[in-house]
Length: 92
Image (cartoon, rainbow, N blue to C red; front, side, top):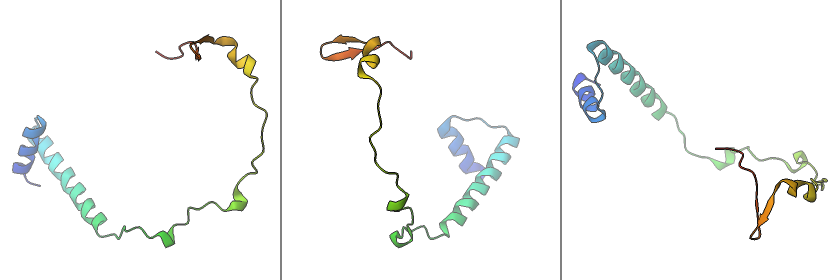
């Protein structure tokens, strides 16, 4: 990246850098571009034969019904209105 390109980007983004800041930004952008060039060298195509994210059936827990909360107790702090429940506001 050169100073002309940086000046154009600064104009588009309404940024104003000092001379030292421009040099630092150019160095950082050059590092980022070099990193992106390295990333482009890797093969990142998806291969479903290499996908080992499946959970084996044996690792799953048994699906057993658990006791739940008492419905009447849960509804103690609500006010029924038009087939709905109005509950106290918890967040602003």
